[in-house]
Length: 442
Image (cartoon, rainbow, N blue to C red; front, top):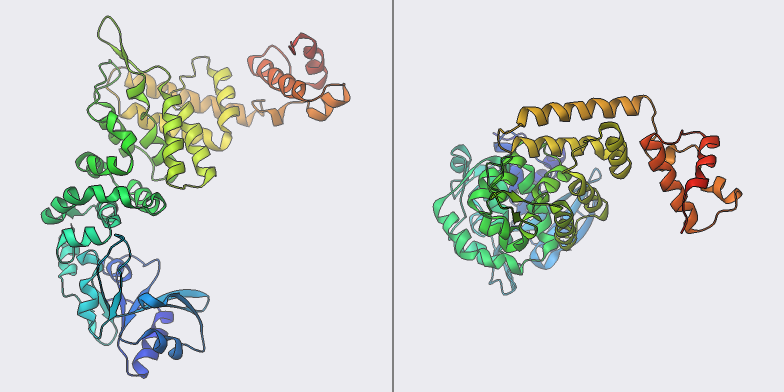
């Protein structure tokens, strides 16, 4: 039923040869049954932690969580976690059990796990162990808690977000009792450290999250309260047919599954509630919302401990996502210089998603102009036209040799770049040196 890699068979053989049980367990079994290649393999056994260390004394071992029964074994430079069967005690901190009791029963061990699709075990000798009907839930595409849902979520509220992630990634429906418990227990997510939330939130967005974002928006607002003002915020404007939150959800459905793109689109309009105005004709406007969205995204992503480089990329894409490129070539060069060539195509992908989530009003015209922008950007790159400081025919050393110092150098270089982009100066050293005289350094 399940194809076990040779490196994993070594683990089974060592345990069985010494009279112990051993099973592959959890996500690797789930993925294999779904026809996916597991990213990693985890094991459970009736051998105690000290027994595991003794049996694998010829291999490198790491006591990653010995008091919880987990030993990591390195085989052919790959790390495998092996955990003794256990039954968990109470969870006072809503994350770790206060104590664990080692067990001799694989069924008892599986009973403590989060969802039925993760509560299966497999060995070459015993086959599939599935006391909670996880295989049937896979076939029926259902996310269901193992045992009593409220107990599972009270043990660790992060499981709520995991349920949403699995539903998004696998496109499985969340079973009714599990769904009800999610809403009853969702405030527990506020106690989970944002660093732990990051992986689950990113994973949720990487799948097909539209149904989750609409149906479970109040759950997400527990961990990102900044999105709540978007809910049901009307956009009475010819360019829009959805409220701000629904527009964001639809835009995500047109966004490629890249972490940077999905995060940028998720937050691109989060600043709109703070700048909304309505004119005398009843038309809503959201001027400069991109700058507010950028600040909020920076704050939330920093809170979740995302890498600084990713936060920077997401924020710059949000800052320029509403660029119209009215002065085609000049604006393309200006924006390309700001976001870098690396991110410019991503910016146009966000523009596409944004347009596709708007009304039909001028949609074809917007999409056609976006293609025109893309074509012109390619021409600029292919022709080697200047759009960044690194492409200027003059640099800081040249200005130092001319007697300029400190802040003057930055002012001059940035002004010369603007002149070259606008076509009021040629990108040659001679022309740029002559143009310096027209620059005010006050």
